[in-house]
Image (cartoon, rainbow, N blue to C red):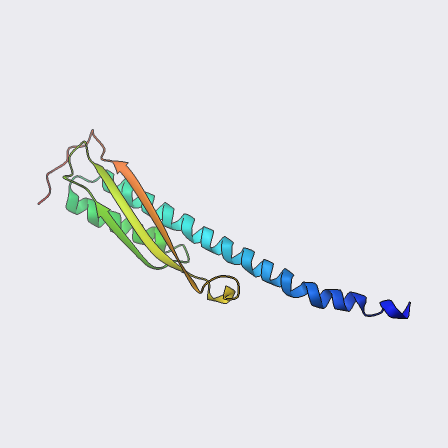
Length: 135
């Protein structure tokens, strides 16, 4: 019986670092997925707002404002948005692309300190609206 006294302590010492690394890795992946879903939501919201605008100038400013409002709720850094309209006619699509950084520096042993996430949304301009030609 004397030979088994330290067995549990040795097993804990060997397994604890692995379990802690797994837990930190899972938490970091969840944070990155949450940020990615937030970027997707903001990108789709911006595309939706831009597709309902009467002209390209209004669409661009409305898309950027909506994107900024939605991004605030997520752990994203340096989020940027690019909006492309084509000629802004009824048959065109609004293409919105975005990118941002997710800071997971606290999980530096498992993942890089910063990860880049990207999103893209394409929405057809609403055909029943009267669109003014851009400047």
